[in-house]
Image 1 (cartoon, rainbow, N blue to C red):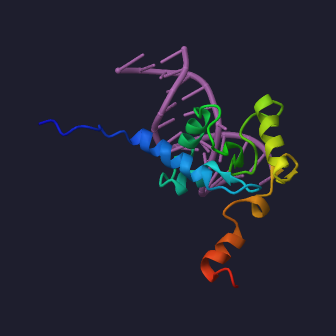
Image 2: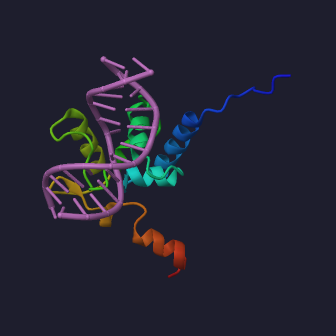
Length: 124
DNA sequence: GATATGACCGCAA
DNA sequence: TTTGCGGCCATAT
């Protein structure tokens, strides 16, 4: 009997987890490629996150614009159409830019408030 | 099959 | 703060 009904496809699996991780990022907040990779259980594979987002079909319900680099900048080259598009979407959600970069300490997710809540509970 | 490219990152200098 | 470098590895040549 052939029990190989579903050949393992680690790549497809990783893709699904990455998309799921990005969908957890709340509106008005941003996260980084590396952070998404870690949340998806793929530490050190930030590049794969970029590859996956690049391949996202138009219309996918994934907030890809909330993912930026660890230095707080948009990954697309400044001046490019994609860059402006992403920046606009973020500003629409209230994410602020200073010198072409987002203050991860303020808009980064998860941020300290989130961690405080996780550790101490919502009621301080 | 070999090489180049890229929506990246952490670290050292 | 910025730059350079090794590490990562799916895709495109």
